[in-house]
Each structure stands twice: as C-alpha cells, then as structure tokens.
Length: 84
Image (tube, rainbow, N blue to C red; front, top):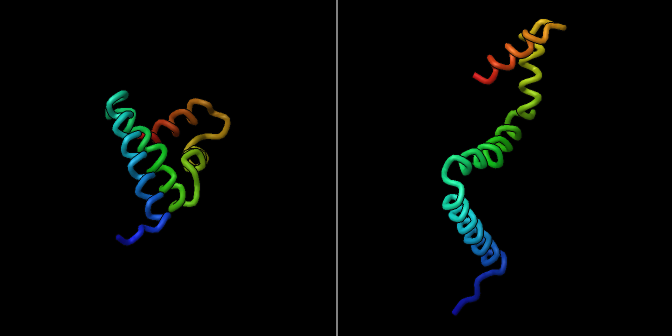
C-alpha cells in the first residue's frame, strides 16, 4: 500500500480538528457567535489584505472626510453613517 506524504496527513488531521472544534462551538454557542467569529477572523483579514487598510483606518478616513473638525456630535454622526 502506498504511503501518504506527511504534509498531506498533517493537513487532513488539521482539517478534522478544525471541523470538530467548529461543531463543538456550534453546539455550545449556536450560529450567532460562529457567524461573528467567521466575520472577524476570516472575512475581515481577507478584506484588509485586499483593501490594504484595516477597518479602523477606513472608519478614520470616512470621519476625516465627513465630520466637522472640533464638533464631537458631527464625528459621532459620521461614524453612524459609516456603520449603516
């Protein structure tokens, strides 16, 4: 019987471990927290890599473009419009 490469075995084992962890998280916390984790740990890093800046930097750029300097209420409104 042919022998599988060690790297392939390690990848399969890692995939199985991640699948078990995902199933345990779903059972314990439900879908809501898993979707938040998916967004924060998978989608956001990919988006940051593609766009070249972080979520905080994008919010700062939006506030700098849309808020009045020195007006705290205007800053909060600019953040609210970014989050919509």
